[in-house]
Structures are given as C-alpha cells and as structure tokens.
Amino acid sequence: MLDPHKPAIIIPAYNEEHSIATLLDVVYPGVLLGHYSVVVACNGCTDATAEIVRNKFPQVCCLEIQRAGKTHAINEAEKLGPGFPRIYVDADVSIDDISLLKLLDQCRERENGAEPTVVAPEGVMDMAHSSYLVRCYYAAWQKTRFCSEFGYGAGVYGLNRAARERFSLFPEIISDDGYVRAVFGYENIVVNRESQSRVVAPKGVWDLLKIKTRSKLGKLQLLQLPECHTPITHRSAVFTQRPSMLEFLVYYGVNALSYLTAWRYRHGNARYQWQRDESSREPV
Image 1 (cartoon, rainbow, N blue to C red):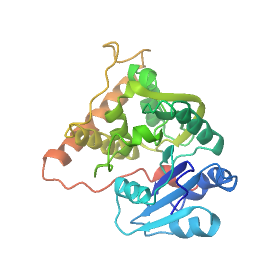
Image 2 (image 1 turned 180 degrees about the horizontal axis):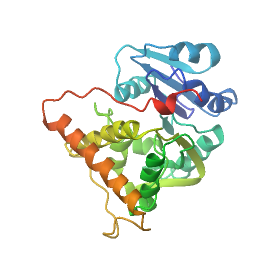
Image 3 (image 1 turned 60 degrees about the horizontal axis):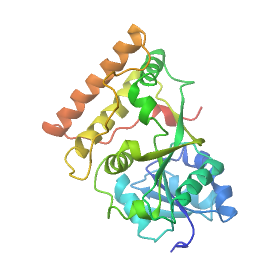
Image 4 (image 1 turned 90 degrees about the vertical axis):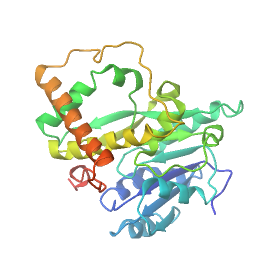
C-alpha cells in the first residue's frame, strides 16, 4: 500500500520500454525527496517495461496487470489507496519533477475549500522529427480558437480529492483525460503556465491518422456517457489566425478521414484494435 497522506503520480504504461526510463529519470528525484509517490501500472505489457521500472527505480511502485487497458490500469493503481492530489501522466509524455510540484501546489491551493480542482500543464509539441505535412497539421491546430481557449498539455492532468470523488471508477473507454475534460468542462480546467509537458509529434501522416482516429473514437464513446458534455466556445470562428491554404487542407483532410474511420469502427462491423503512434517512441 502507498502512503495515503502523500500526493501520487499515476502512470499507466503499455509496452513503453523505450520511453518509461526517460520519464522516470526526471520524475524520480521527487520520489527520493519524499514529495510524492509514483505508481507505474504496466498493463498487458509484453516487453521490458516492468523490468526497467523495478531495476532502475526501486522506490517506484510497479504493478504488473495481465489485462491491457489504460483506464483499467488506472483503476487498479487507485486500489492501492494513493494520496491526494493525484497527477495522471501518460508514459510517453515528458514532464519533470518541478512541473509536477507546481501542479500539486495548484491543486492544494483550493483544497481547503473542498472545491473540485482539475489542473493541467502547458503543452509543448516537439516536431523536430515530424514530416512537413504533420507540421502543417499542428500549425493549423495551434491557430484554432479551440487551442487558444482550451489548449493545454495532453497526457497530463491532476485532480484534488474533491474532484476525484465526483466519480467512482474510470469507465472502460479509450480516453481517460478526455473523460475528465468532459465531466468537469474544458472551461473549468486550470492551466498552469509555469508547468510544461512535452509531447513528441508523429513523424508521418499515417502515424498522425492513427492517433487522430483513436482520439475521434474516444470522443464518440464520450457522447454515449450522460455525465459528459462538450465544450462551449465563445465565438463561432474556427481559427483565431488564418492558416495557409496547405495547412487548412491538411488539417481538415486528416480530421475528416479520422472521423470517417472512427465512425466506421464505432457504428460498423469493423473491430477496432488499439492503434498508437510508434514513430514518436522510436529511440533517436
């Protein structure tokens, strides 16, 4: 069991042998200093993820769960009774201990009033190894009103006790962070601009289509849950800055194809198999 009085970092991991050490190298100092506990919930792994965690980071709690499933892994980690606040971090995201502490502090600021608090870092997209078309897609996305109003670091969010007690278990869905955003409302998530998470963008368009299809399918799942709602934007215009014609075409082309594929999986006879971008996990 974990210390119930100590904040916790929960990291679900599926075959992340190439990325888990990179994340834990910068998170581990906070464990050694007693700032928080860390649980890595290895789910359905067939690689060396759990071995790396146990051998290199002995003070990290490592769970080995036979069944693959991100939200299932989170639920299993929470059965250990970790303390609050809790920060949930994707295993392929980079965030350091200082940024985590800033998120924890922000959660604590409103803890005394028992007000539900959801925090997230500012997101930094690393496109150093991405193709030109992938960069065009994200250039357009960064010019959308949605990004300017609700954009923050994907793959990392924090909940204080009051927020976590708003729901029981995470449902069996693709997107845990999407679920949290939909339950609490995008407009109610506090973005800490002094905290940053780094996400490596896909290398090619095919890899981009994989993660966007998964994202759209996750959104279709959320529409079926009564406790979830969609964000409300303040204006109808899609973009705050005009994208170039190529950026515009790539952005809408990728989204349209992703939605069509996700719709086919959701409403057709096609069986969805978990797809992720392996290109961003390759050692550089």
